[in-house]
Length: 195
Image (cartoon, rainbow, N blue to C red; front, top):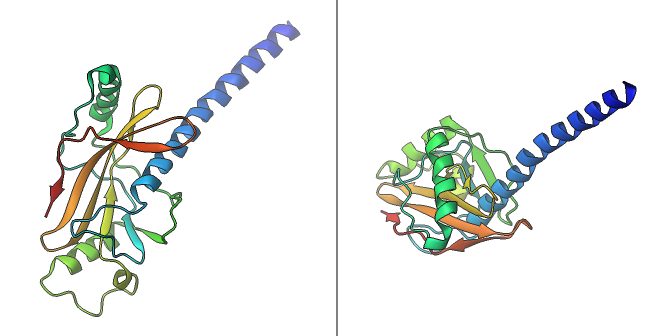
């Protein structure tokens, strides 16, 4: 009886360890992807001019709402798995953590600071009294959640920027990578939005 109890306990401990391992590994992949997107990010006006990155601290839906991607035929199963996750969770908002690994300094802005930035930079004339941190940035970056295939080798996400009245960019991105954390963009996106 004691042997059976130990065996059950070890099995339960292994299941618990495996249960906590997957989210931790997935979190590492999510922030590796976000860090990749925030390394020399694309803007609507050309070269990045930000001294500091201002990033909304909560994910948003991508633009356009339906991802404009075309996966090669051999990746059809991966596309179906990713879109299944997207369709289940695209309305959910995820709070971001300061876990980006990028060389440029960044600040995660809460909802009220995001609103303040958008209002300031959407007016025809930006007042000089704006927050000190806003003076070091030209863009507000927003990220979507990251959607993976089952093996976590292909990912879909989006990034957008707001830089003022009729100034911004939104892009869906597809990335592929091995489990070593190196994610590379795939040329499977069929649209981008620039103003």
